[in-house]
Image (tube, rainbow, N blue to C red; front, top):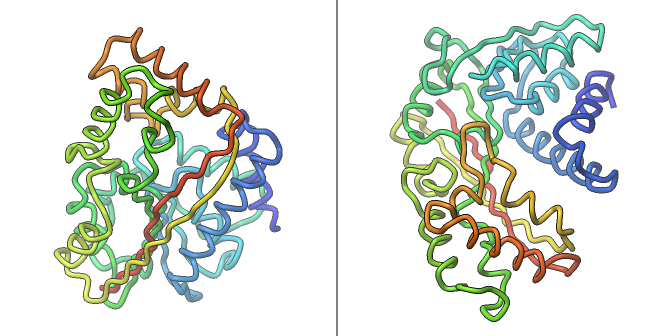
Length: 288
């Protein structure tokens, strides 16, 4: 592993993954590495190209580019949150190496780059936080050079395993009420986390003008035994800084006492017992 990726993984362990045990950390890092490699393989980056990691977050894709190409490509870390750019800058500074890297504070629906500027554009779990997808795809198309590629990994959360599918009606008071509420907010067209699927993504890309669009849906099934604390985190950890927690979503339907009791019953039903869940993801490659 290169020095830059060592710095990146160390930073994640100290910050975003600090609540995990060492085994969970390593499993998550391995999964992220697989995602990174899949997107980079799709991008087929060449030396001398200009590449952007939009919505870079902690820099998973961008640091993968650096590890592979060092200073042989021009890389742009772009995010609308300055703290994400600062984190990437700090990780980069610790490597004590010189790379062709720049930082761009910009919303993906209003990219501060000129037309036909990039050879490659990449995102990882970004559109899932964008309510209106079409303007984002339009902007990505605009800043790509002709024959340029947009490659991405996006979770299709609307098709993932839901809580009510893990539970038996006898385990939960007001099971049907909570099932109805979950179905409703998991199909909310105004919620960026769930208002899209593979078909809508393909339509968005083609509407933007992409001539070749390939979307590969992967369904990952897993088994594990969550602790009570892990289950609590399902409900109280926000999926993004500007997104409601699952508890807050249920509070739109029920009083807090009822929601707290529901969380407790879920903990009692599932804690330290093996559960089976599936997660749907989309790997995207589109050519301008």
